[in-house]
Length: 479
Image 1 (spheres, rainbow, N blue to C red):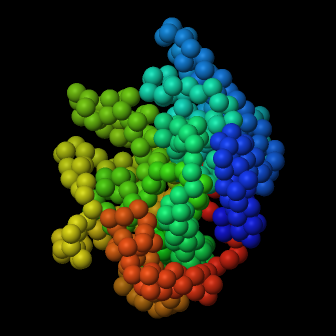
Image 2: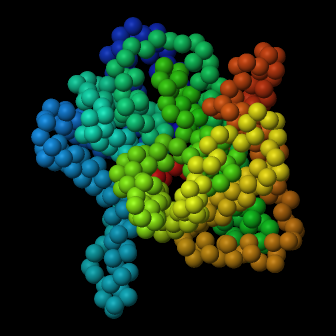
Image 3: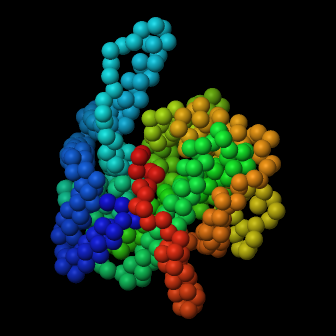
C-alpha cells in the first residue's frame, strides 16, 4: 500500500478513528489495532512476506528475553549471534543470493569453467533491509545492557511492524520507539496538526517534485548516449531532487503519520542539500541509517579514536562500502559507497569533519559568498555520486560521466523542456531554506492564520494541478 495511493487515503482515517475513538482508553487494544493495521498494510503487497516479519519479530522477542535473563557472557553472546545470523542470513538470501551466484560464475568463467549453479527467481520482500536493522538494534542494545527486554509481545511486534515507517524508515532504535508502545498515549491536537502539515509537505515533495523529476530523469538516463553534456548534467541534478523528494517525502509522511497516533519518530533528513561539505551532508541525509552504522559498526571498530591512520581509513571505508552494499546487489552501489568514502576521508584525516555542526547562515537570511560556494560545490559533488547510484551498471555510469565532460556541456540546445520543472524545485528550495532550522518545510504554526492557510491551499493546489498521481513507488522500496 503506497502513501500516495487512494487505498491509503481510505486506510489511514479508518485506523485513526478506531485508534482514538474506539480504543483510545486501552493501550493493549491500541497496540493490537496497530499490529493488525501494520500487517494489513504490509500484506497489501504480498501476504506471503508476512511470514518473514513474523519470524523476525518472534525470534528477536524470544532472544531478547533470553539475553536479558542471563549473566553468562558466553550465553548472551550465543543468543546475539543467533539473532545476527538469522536476520542477516534472511536479508542476505533474499537480497544478495543471485548477486553472489552471478559473481561466482563470472569469476570461474574467467578461468574457462562454468559452475552448474543457477540463480533463483527471488522476489525481494519490501522493506526487509529496514525492519531487519530495526530488530537488530533491539537485540544488540539488550545485549549491551542499554535496554531492558520487554515482556509485551504485542508491543514488540507492533514496534517492528509499525506501518508508517515499516517499508522505508526511518530505521527506529528500540530504545526510542519501543518505550512509546508500552506507555499510555493521549491525543494531542497540536501534535496531530503538525503531523498533518508534515504529511502534506511530504506529499508535495513526492508527488509534485520527485515524480515529475522521475519522468525527465528516466528519459535522460535511458537515452544518455545520444544527449549533450548539458542535458546529462541536468539529468544528474534532477535525479538529486528526485531521490531527495522521494525519500525525504516518504520520511515526512511516515513521521507525520506517526504523530497522528501519538508517536515521535526520529528526523531522517535535515535539509541535506544545504550542507557545506560531505561530512555535513551525511549528518543530514538518511540520518537513521547513518547513525545506525555509526553506532553498530563504526564505533565498535574503533571509530575515529584508533591509534593509526590505516585503521581510521579502514573504518571509514568499511561503513561506506557496507552502506553502499546495503542499498542493493549491484556494483554501482558499492562504487557509490566507495566514492563517498573517498570524498569523506580528507576531512576526517585532517580533523575537519565536524567543522559545520550548526545550520548554514544561522541568524541570517542569506548565506555568505563563501557559504554559497561550499553549498553549491558540495551539491554538485553529491550529484556526481548520484550518477553511480542511478545508472544501470558501472559501464553506464562511466559513459554518463564522460558525456558530461564532453565539449557539448557548454551547448544548450534541447535543454528547455528539461528546465520547466525549475519553478517547482524553486518553491521547494525557498520553503526549505526558510525552514532550515526546523524539522520540516511546513512547520509554520507561528505564522499568521491568513498566511498559514494561504500556504496550505497553495500546496494543495500545486498537488492537484502539478502532481503526478500515477502511484509511482518510492525509490527506497527496492532496498
